[in-house]
Length: 86
View 1 (cartoon, rainbow, N blue to C red):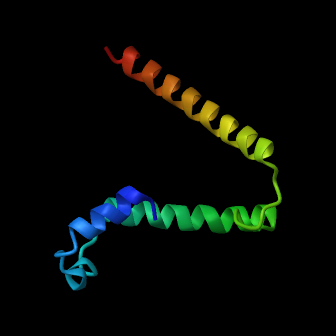
View 2: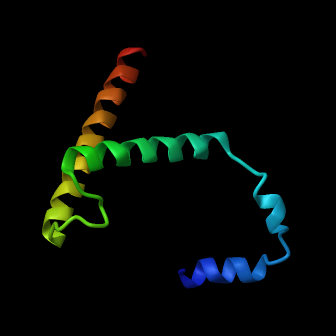
């Protein structure tokens, strides 16, 4: 764990951890479900996990760049839609 996370838990050790098991955020749970499904699809498609993938650092950076560029395009498209509604 990073130092900041460790420090957080050390300074908040009075939190009742049994109670934490009963706390759920439906948004976070939905994102977790989506991540799990996306992982299963990726493992099926690429026949490997992210953990076991043999991509080089440059290949990982290339994939990340492509994903971020896609995201930037989606944002621009949505902004266009919002501007046209004005």
